[in-house]
Image 1 (cartoon, rainbow, N blue to C red):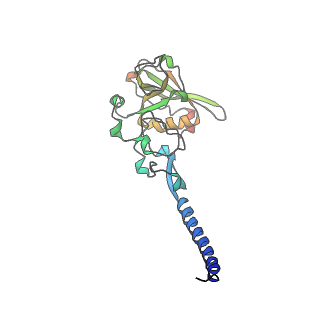
Image 2: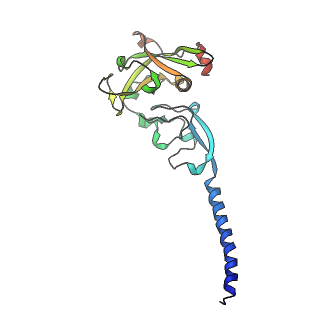
Image 3: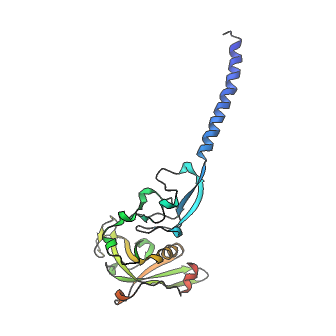
Length: 233
């Protein structure tokens, strides 16, 4: 090749390389920014929570931000449980490692549930409670306090049974142990109350008080007649 043709060839190759580089970058960015639908948690979801449509919401975002563990389909989320001793924070994706099927939830807790009940974990940092009186089998009432135009505080649901106490090492405690650090309380609650409890935790503060000793024969009931329910429906 003559010396005169080499500069001419270089002049032709440089624009061609630039065009190919730009085209490759465009295709890469287009793929990276491909948008898609994904579900996130509407509220903080604690361990053993049965996930329904009330606990999820759909958002749209670049798929490149999602790992292989993220469950994008509603069918892979709704009807499953949050894994024991796991917290899915509000706004978080649903990862496969944080979810369990009912078959995987069979343990001593499930054996204590009555018909129509589900287990519901509450972390002690999320509630007001005197930990010293907590024992497995105790019946308690749950109150909700919210601050809107004015402060409202009333009974949310009564006759809730404690079926498990867990320390920070995720070990079950038979009763409150002053030498251990209590992390979460597992409650047996009516299935229909789960969505209300999640909403209540999102907008206010829950507190637990000791229930009546005769509660064993009394059905748990949501206090729908309370003024606080207008903020939960």
